[in-house]
Length: 440
Image 1 (cartoon, rainbow, N blue to C red):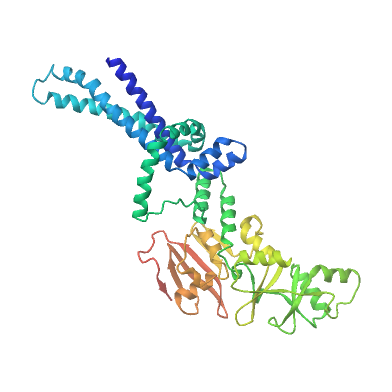
Image 2: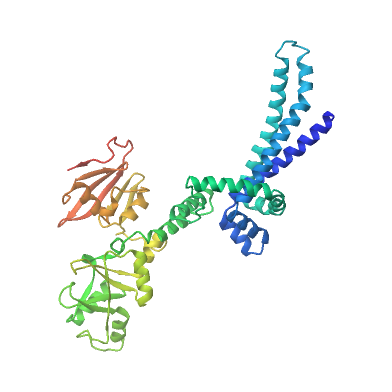
């Protein structure tokens, strides 16, 4: 054959190998989520790609048969086509015994470079750019190629499967989507500008409902406003005016003897109708949902859904009331700054770029978001910033006690009857080599 004929055949072989390389990467890299969306919209080719991914053994066997056959044939033709011309060119300058070897090396390098560039590197890089669209475009011709190679592919797969079973290799592909996978997708979307910072934060909070327990979002015991069963009308009116809550616990003497709760709307109706409030009774007191403090927020949402309630009392293992929680508290946890009013007594106050005043009752998850800390040490042992300080110091903190962690200094500012009211958190410009230190 002439040089021109050899070049044409080599170009055809390169094109065939490039097509197989393009197809291999596109079909392997096509994401099932996008393919399912395309299939549901009516693109039958997307469903063919999904079916091929489920049973990919025949395709990969056929692809490797084609690629190796083309590479071997290209090497044989290329070496025979270009070697005489390289040899003739070399002998103009060199007549020694190495002339044939140099001619072979040059022809081998040329053919190999052409196949690497145009049949391997470029097609694979193109396939990685848009794997789903390319996979859909090539699915019909690749199915024809698989049928052509079916007999030899079956034989190769039998040998491969035998070896896999012999060495106990699991060939089943796991396609379960985990929270880490979704988180990675959200991070990529945020970096690409598809998700705004607030939206990213909102989605993260939704998934955190499975991990955050009820105490992280409840109104704590000392902040619960309640009525006693014999509460005077004047006291009821004063509490309604002073505290803008929609629901109030009713207790028999103290907060640990819960009877039920009253809706502020019911009491206001009685006031508008000029009815007496001298004593709370069965017409106004409702049964209250009681829950353990070990429930997660996700479990509480299910409990609210099943009972049709929006208000619950949180009880600890000693049957003591530790707080109350409402559906609105959970929504505030999820929505964050979107629904949290900007009040003077907000839990986290940013003083400047590197320091914050933070209440001790601030949930750890809120602290991590505010300070952009990925993880707190052994955080399963506490729920709040005050709990973190007590856990690290191994004592009841006093003002000026300090804990270092993650490039931040946590300093106790105010303590009221053993309760940590406020801390000053400062970002360290030069993080201490000893990342976690404690001092008094």
